[in-house]
Amino acid sequence: MTDEPEAVVLCGGFGAARFLGGLLGALDDPSRLIVVVNTGDDVVFHGLRICPDLDSALYALAGRFDEERGWGPAGDSFSVSAALGRYGPEWFNVGDEDLALHLRRTELLDGGATLTEATGILAGAWGIRPSLLPVSDDPIATVIRTEVGDLTLQDYLVARRAEPPVHGVDYVGATEAGAAPGVAEAIARAEVVVVAPSNPVISIGPMLAVPEVHGALAARSGPTVAVSPVVLATAPRTGPEIQRYRARERLMAGIGLAHRPAAVAEAYASFIDAFVVDRRDTEEARELARRGLPVLKADTLAPPGPPRRELAVQVLDFARAGLAPRPPDGRAVRPWPDRRGGAPADPDGPRSTGTTG
Image (cartoon, rainbow, N blue to C red; front, side, top):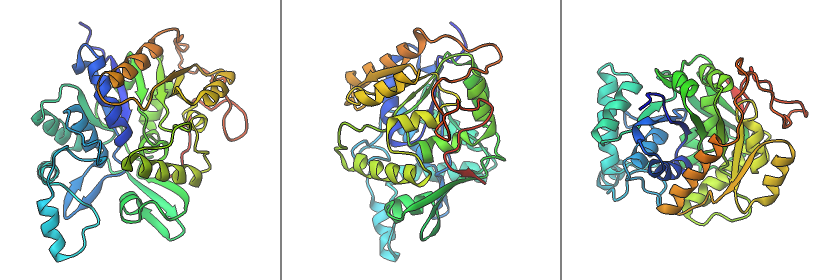
């Protein structure tokens, strides 16, 4: 049995959590899965360190993610949140079981643990076999520039319901941040890297803005495939899907990206080798194929259970089959056009999904 990771998945929250459930069932050995998660949306609330994307990934890997609500563990209660409401409005609801996680994380961090160390302890308490890693132990903050001023991500998404028009996005601290221990090495060594169907601006963008992370992706010799979070041919159905669709559309527009799968592929053009679109988005698939990008059409909206496992199997098989390795120097030139002017993307620099600061 090899010690090399079978797959590394770059994750945000909701879309990634749904994908992870199927991926676990598609792997013979889940311990060879490494899940690297965005931390740009972390927030301190009532003195507690909350990591929304990390927590969504943790609950998904534990089989407890509440897909109907879109966050937190399924079956959670909200007695503490209701009691806090007695003392003033609560704009950020935290469930009781979720609260226990945040209390323990904050205790560990205050005691000197890094976020990587604290995450490992929390994941171990849930019996999670894959490695769950934050993208960085250094602080990264996604800041949304809007007509009403600069807003933290949770202020924009939760308190203001993604309503203010977006003029730009900053990943504060990302360029100075280092990759968390093991992240760059895992990306380099993994048989397959998958970019989960997460928001390209606020979930994947902050991770790509960390130089070590983007550098490791651009230098990989093995295949890297991204799954589109955007589906055009089918309207979002559930409350969480509708909210995320609207927010993603506004965020992508705010940094000059059309809300379509092809634009997501272009945003990742400096490091992906292939792309997965929903089977219903046939015209998007044709356009990307015309540009020279290998494309898989699959049911990216697959329901839980066997259909979602089948999606993961298809993505992994697609990544492994027929994708030629890059040259030893890792400087493969992508054939599809860069959105800024038609030239292939520069493999040496991260694609901008906003600005860094």
